[in-house]
Image (cartoon, rainbow, N blue to C red; front, side, top):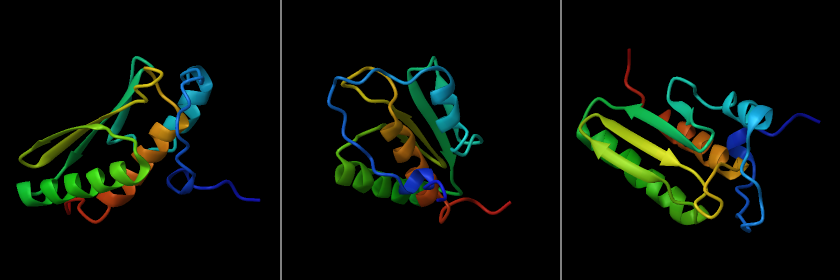
Length: 119
């Protein structure tokens, strides 16, 4: 049986009883993300920087990420500026990272595919 792509995995809600990911488990999930966009900061949160050709695309992407966050009830910090959106993601309930944070990041990468500037 093939492993499910990260963006297609269920985004499981945190109960508050989980321990934050660390070590190899965290690294394995990180390797499934677009590492040109995302970085793991202090094994505490994900930070992603998406670049756009203009403000309108950055705004539309932000709206789509906001809709995703509402659907999953898992809300990142979003910083919108001209040509750039920076996302910070972690599970506040445990003050660290869970698989759900990586699933959300992978889904954002998927959304970004339609906005990615031509090289």
